[in-house]
Each structure stands twice: as structure tokens, then as C-alpha cells.
Image (tube, rainbow, N blue to C red; front, top):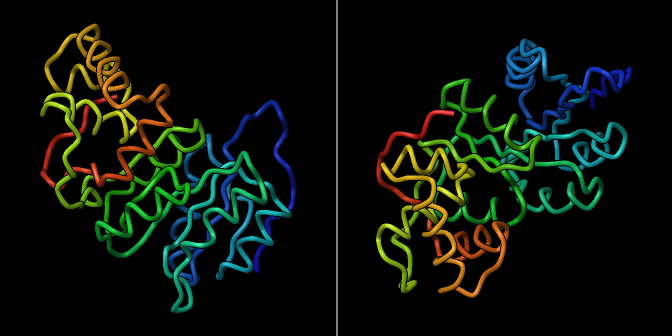
Length: 223
């Protein structure tokens, strides 16, 4: 277990990150990538679920970048355990491959980000940055899921709901779908009314529960 010593000053407002991966070479590469961003600081490393929980307890990071498979075992149970140790800590999953079940189970367990190891570096950086602000991010390559069950929503409402669960803002959704912000907000209100839900968190949980991550290729909004 490697725990980096020294606390950043409060004035820096750095995003404190712990890396949990059972391959030292991967951790080293991730550390170099993330430490190169002046808004990030890697404060600890772990090579197993047990070590990850120990480092989280000791370092109290803002974000944990978690390999979904360490030492031949699933790390899925670590996600709620990390949140139980430090309620403010957010989890970004980084893995070699994704299935519909792995994406939905990870997000359903409390992860805010899901990125593949062969995605562009900017995807991981974006996922960590969004997680630090309690926002979700799923890389394009990880958006694999079966068709959603019948929801009673129109196709346009499903498009809006998909973008909400992927963490996009109303202006970003409007730009992506070619709508006005007012129309996006109207769709969102109607979705909440039809589903009987009252917050973005409830919408996210509902969308994950019915498998509403789109398999189709599409360009993410700028922002």
C-alpha cells in the first residue's frame, strides 16, 4: 500500500484522488496523467479492495479511481463501502471492458463515472472532474445497454432522460438535441410528472434501473 504524505492547503482547493488498481504500471501511468493537471493531486494508491478502503479511511480523498477487477476479484462491493467510509468521496470506475450489466451495476452501486482503459485520457480527466462536483460521466465506449423497458415516455423524452443520467446540463442537452433550453426544461418537467419523480437523483436511479444507457453512437455535447 502506498499512501502519499502531506495535505494540500485549503487555499489550493485541489481534487484529492486515490488510485486503486492491482497493476503498478497502470497506477504509475494514471498518477502521471492526473498529477499533470494542476487541479488534481493523487494522494494515495492501493492494489486491492482492502487496501483501497484503508487508504480512503486514512487520506479521505474527493475521488477514487477504481479498477473494477483487482487480483482476480470484482471490486463492485468496494463502491458502497468507500462511500460508507467517506460520504463525500466519489467513485470513478476504470476498467478494461464494459458490459451492460457492469455499467449499470457500478452506477447503481454509487459510482458516478465509468471509463474504459483504452478510452482517451481526456475521458478519465473529465470523469474525475465531474465526479468531484457530484456529476456523472459515462464514456462513449462504455454506453452499452439493452433496449430500455416500456416507460410510457416519447422518444424525445427518452433522449432528454438519457442525457440527464449521463450528467449533461440543460444547455448541453439543448445543444445536443437541437432544442431550446426552455423546451428541455419542459420535457424534464413532463418526465418527472409522468414518472412521479421529483429530483435529478431520482431520475438517475430510475434510468439506471430500467437500463436506459443508449448503445447507439452519438456525439457528446461540448462543454
